[in-house]
Structures are given as C-alpha cells and as structure tokens.
Length: 127
Image 1 (cartoon, rainbow, N blue to C red):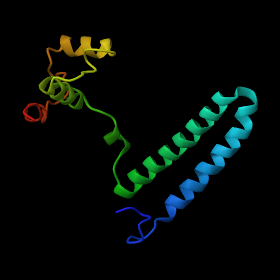
Image 2: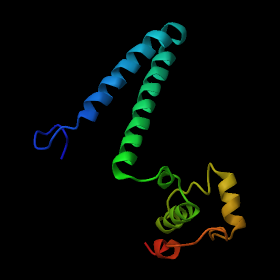
Image 3: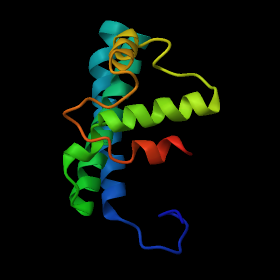
C-alpha cells in the first residue's frame, strides 16, 4: 500500500524529504550548470538523490532501531551470493570485475575466513 493511495496515513517525512530534494537540486543546478553544463545538471541531481538516500537510510535505521553495521556485508554474505550464483549458473562478480575478491576467495578455498563464523553458509548453499 502506497503512502499516497488514500488508505494509509501520510508520513510527514516524505513531504519534507521531497521539499529538501527539490531545493537542493534547484540550488545545485543554479551553481553547477553555468560552470559544467549538462554534467553540472547530472551532478546536481546526483547530489540531491544521494542526500535524500542518506536521510532515508538514517530515518529507517532510527525507526527500526538497527545499528549501521547491519548494512555492511559480511564474509558469509559474500560466500552465500557466490554459492547461489554458481548454483544458478549465472554471472558471478567473483569471476569478472573483482579480481581481488576472487583471489581472496580462491585462497580461502571457498570457505569463510577462520576468524569469522561460517554461520548459515552451508544452509544457504542448498537454496
């Protein structure tokens, strides 16, 4: 259910974030377009979207009372994604584009580093 469908209560944070995004985008456009042209417009939009993303992320973490550390992937997550990718036979970032990760994974023999627990990895590989 969307916050605009009329069936749920509108969250005032959405309206505030939209207003902040518009103001930041307009100000950044006035500053950057004369110097950078179309690239300045793209940079202004990127700055605006990034700012709103950080605020939304902060608001989510505050409302759910989760720590920032839940957003950082763990080694077990990386190995679970690699195992799933191998099982599905699709593209794997471990084979292309990330040679430093691929060498680390091959050095470890596909296992999690010894100092980190391998909790749930075997279970995830059976997906």
